[in-house]
Length: 249
Ligand code: BGC
Image 1: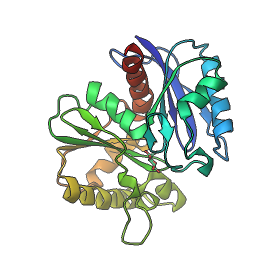
Image 2: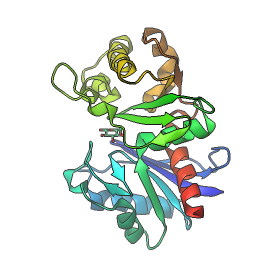
Image 3: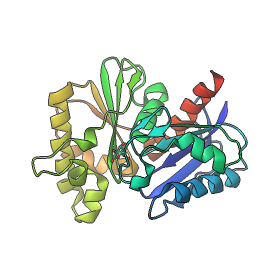
């Protein structure tokens, strides 16, 4: 099945048409900067622009960078506080004149792609897909099944801030950290998660995953760590697979 997958991030909104059987992108990947402030109306307009860009008439899967329960935003994450309580599927549908939208948390959907078709395929036990970008996203899977809205980036670090302020890729950029310094921080985070959850596997996604070969040697954690097979496209692909399945029900 062909589905339009959209990944709404803190800095960019990316989309492509996806073959949901094998995760292949069937179109170019189109990116538009996330509007600032990242308010509902402004983002809905970008979604409309995306749908028009692809001239898309079918279902749309959407990664959203906040807690999402039944298509509704429950926390603003790194977006505007105006998102809290918004039924994201309804808002986008209205803006786009009818396409049906299926919305879930970004890391949950990136994980969906990886567990269905990528680095987590067939892995039994707990698998965490960790996306390192503007924030830290975490998708938890147990025996291949998603346990939604696990928000590990919101754990508090001993410095009193949530850990994503310390270890997300945005912290590396903001504080001008070397890849090695930043990777040490990611290691502190993953070691803490290891104590809490004893996972079988960590899968690292997000834009920085393309540099995985450069930083993996500095990542010291006693759990296997793999890079997302679909890299930063995992969100787009997972969103499309998710919408494809939901639209058949
Ligand atoms: C949000 C998560 C999201 C992550 C990555 C965090 O700030 O709380 O819901 O998955 O950023 O976008």
